[in-house]
Length: 295
Image (cartoon, rainbow, N blue to C red; front, side):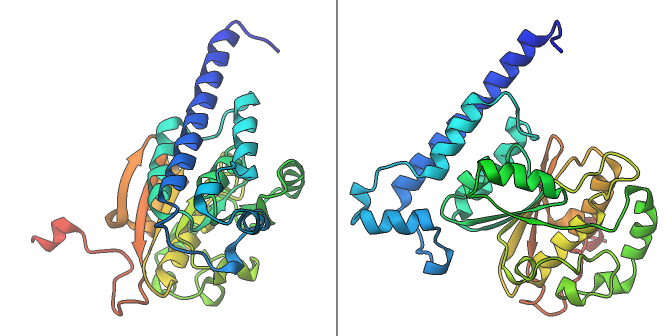
């Protein structure tokens, strides 16, 4: 149904689509300029599209054709009337990290209207989407077959979040391990093996559904994202949590991703940088608060 505010809504849609278009064009230009000095990818991480480009393009100077995945994203967002779930400023937070780390391994909880954008901003890397709605996966991947998505099932509910928070404060939940071997009830244990065995450089928690009491909520997704980051062999993982204006996302991200690891909050998005706990024995689950150190 059309409303009186349709013209203003259309202007917002046009502005958002143009903003995303500028994002992708700048990213592609940056990738071309830095391609000669960027680190090489092993063949196992190259997509079929990239292997074809390598076969037919003997040198960087001759490889000027826009990748199909990027051209698909440009056409999609310019012609779509549906805006992504995150605002321009919120997207900018994650994009700045992708500018530095891509191509990389990027895990995203949720398959949404912004998925093609995330995959394009991580062009040349691997972007895996974890989604609870099997029918939605089929709809999206039919339109964009290059997107990689796994269907998963959650066994939690938002109405039980207080109980899960209490369980999460137990010693079992402060122990760092592969989530499949964790004794913490918050850990996600029955996902595909690839979910646990990949060293993720970025993790975005923007799912599962969490806006009503019977929804699965993001309690386990947030906890497990932190566990995956801590359990990597070395380095650090950037973790982003969206919708922190809601109690579950606010409390669980602050508790299990730790305020001491938080880098910034912009709108409804929080950015955490979590180091490997396996690389340094004895590291506390959360860093000691700065104010407590001074006492």
